[in-house]
Length: 359
Image (cartoon, rainbow, N blue to C red; front, side, top):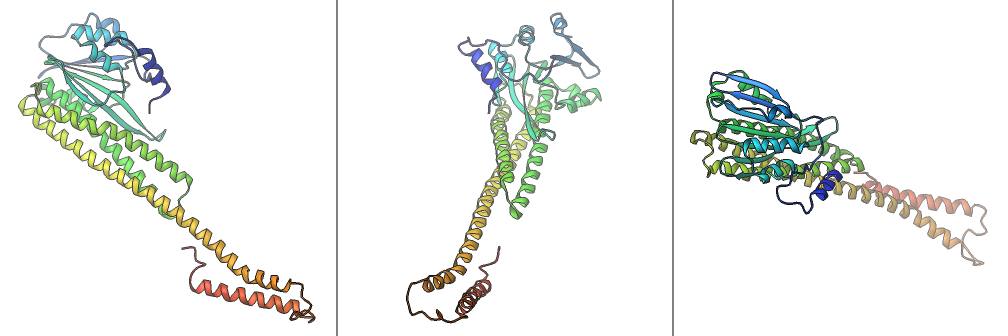
């Protein structure tokens, strides 16, 4: 569900021309940062740039470039990068709109890829979703993130450690490695979600309450959020596997197929969790219904135990001159004994038929 800040940002953009740069999203880092990796088979140069330094930055002709941006709320920074790399205005607009669905678009000289980084925050007990934009050129890769998440750090370590294959391969292999790192993050998130579902299921089977229902609805919302990210991602990766625009070398397409298999696995795991959540809701409703039935049955038994006493009391309360035990000094106590005997007999009958059991 979109936040109020997102709705306000959309209102600011309403009626604007296509390609107008307006940031839609929450500010998740105070100051945007630009991280650059220039690498080749035998060299690696890593540095940070400011927005002022970006205007004078010159790419080395013999090195491959990976430029990563943290923080997207400075539209002037995105505009400057668009000017340096010749990005289409619609691409820059989509980078700033952090509510994009995963997709792949070709702009002739480069590919534009959108996906989401989803991680489970144990502190807030919520899913944290960040949009990631990847631009794959012939000799460069640009990545845009809302905030530092550590998602791409394993890829940086492989470059720093001098892994031969990733250093010698083209930027298409780097784009694959970044995509694979982002997709792998979903497995840990789904595993955490699955563990919570199993724990909640055990609690529902023993003593369901309103807090469990709230937890169940929260998990269903998180599964829906994951579904909105994973299902379009499968189609985007499938489009990369087809490689219609020939941005990926033939030997690297097989790696993209592996990423596609991972997305299929994620979808199957997510659907299993969604089915489990649906069955858990049925368990909760059945448990509550069974509890109500037990309470109604208990009230019914109590009512039936007192019905004979009420009947006897009504009979002896009639205004007739001639009534059994009416003149007997012990008539009152005999009447109470009859009431107690009937109630005890009925209670014993209910107990033998297990009507008084809570299970």
